[in-house]
Length: 376
Image 1: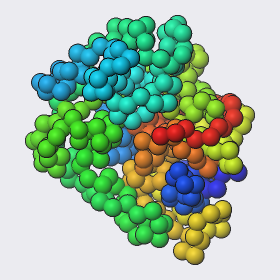
Image 2: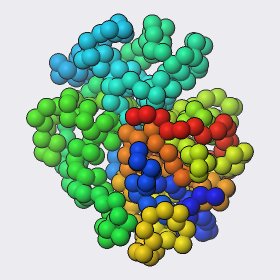
Image 3: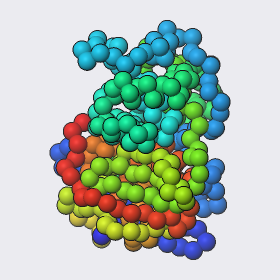
Image 4: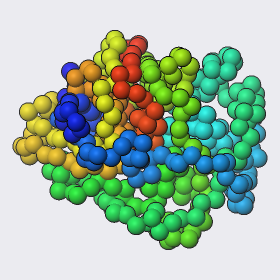
């Protein structure tokens, strides 16, 4: 049984749950609680893309004029012992192309890792290649031939990007969190990083000296493109062993693959087949000591307001398995690399894409068994 619960404030009240994310030491980074409720009752899912969690459909951008971006766009498959900077350029390009193909590598950071390997393996399998997860000549050729558009773009920071409201410091204590009117981005740099599915450290590294708080500043970002799936999602498969969520259309065609944090060995995710009950954008989070199994309960019941740094992110997909759901996260870097308390956690942009496309009643099938958290 999940340990959070939510009141879905729609035409008919419902319940859901969410799971906080223990850090490597094992204690809760954000205490587990009773859980999300829709903050914006009348906001349609199609328009509830909170704080730039997903992009609007648009044509491929023109190539960036930045020398750094040009090097990434021109990168080829690096040799095994390539210079780290050259290897990073190729990995950035591969991650962007996978993201645009809806085989999400999670956060775009220019680093090799389990999420990238899983994304490559899924892409290979879907394209009739040996699904070993290795970014080899065949996988590289397939990726770049299918999508030759630039991987990077120039972006001019707008007044809206810097307007806020921001939340410069996000506390971990629920009492302090409950005092905040919103758990927004810490600042423009975090907003821009999430808007373009990037690690904030990579955004900063690609734009040394840039003033992210100044409208009119031109920065180099990932050209993530549109985020709409080709069809509505009729079935979701949650692979607990593979830490992956796969979305299928009514014809059982694979539409998207996402890295995920799925339960833990001591608080496993559900098993068997369930369904999507409803979708809740911009959820609040309710801290309920009566359902705690760890953390400090003396604060009493608290409501944590919405925002991208809310413990359940910007979207809650409620399941018919009471107290369980698929939701976002305040820390996209840790998706697939940490454990949850039973629910399924995606990046904010991936769960928004899925939430926009999934239909009510869509099947949700859990397969496999949890394994220890991957190393970061």
